[in-house]
Length: 75
Picture 1 (spheres, rainbow, N blue to C red):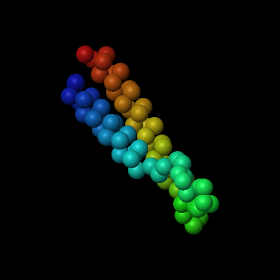
Picture 2: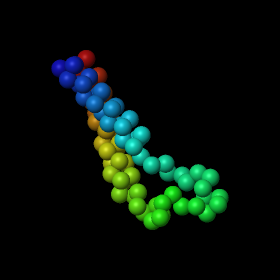
Picture 3: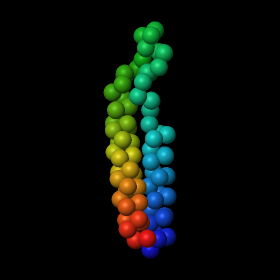
């Protein structure tokens, strides 16, 4: 049973790491000083991908939290 929850914890942490690294940066950086946009359509083109990745990271965090609490209770 402990091995099962250990695998769940590893998968949840992997989901969090991959989800965070795939997200676009929240700030525009120094390009905003010159008035440059990151793409032709502005910020709205990346909104759906970032929203989906935010939900994936939140779900991974909840899974990590619940898995660690349950694993602590089993041990």
